[in-house]
Length: 275
Image 1 (cartoon, rainbow, N blue to C red):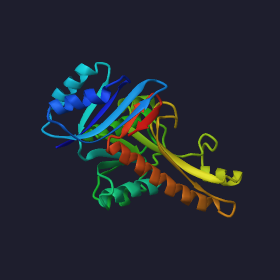
Image 2: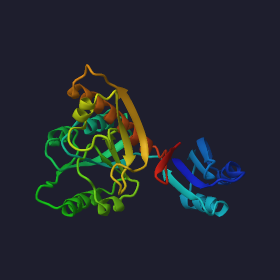
Image 3: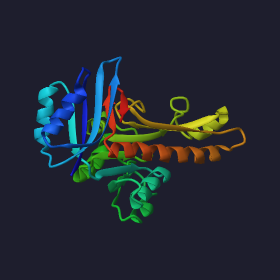
């Protein structure tokens, strides 16, 4: 059995030796490892893939004894469960569905929850449950509580906003800290509101992009996981810009999701460390 070990702690001499000795003494094999030191804040980050007949609690306790102030996480290397939230844009959702089908992402999509019915036929082609929860006749809290009822049935490892176009309240976000991944166009905050690609076209932008991030209570201000850009020019219509932007969005979202599925992300303050 393979596992992922994540440690973050105050930096000091001999950390790699101490960690390696605990693993060696417990007959654990290190398959690969990465580390990073934030010298400015004297912070150490460590990720390793390990294997063996492992007692997770024993290993964690042994590591905690030598690193009493460390955050230590050990998880089995296995397929993670994910719930997708969507509205009516198909590009991000469809890309994840296809990548699960083709096994380009090691993911188990448990269900899709949407506040519009537009994508039901697409989702059901992949034999995945689709839940339509109409938001028009409910206030924000009532709508979120109905979504939470569905999500709690599945208890997913991650929730992905695949162009889900509603602002989440602190009530919802607080239930799933650092478990909700969102994708948005990088025009924010310059192009807020309806049709950002048309706004960008009207301003003659030369670069468009996308940002994937964890969701917190500050709108589109959570820890950034992945970003990318593509160049555009004056010869393109706003629809062509939108199409190029959608390609960037779905690629950035799937890369961010892959990092999360592989347990490569440390959330540190309001930023991420990727190992």
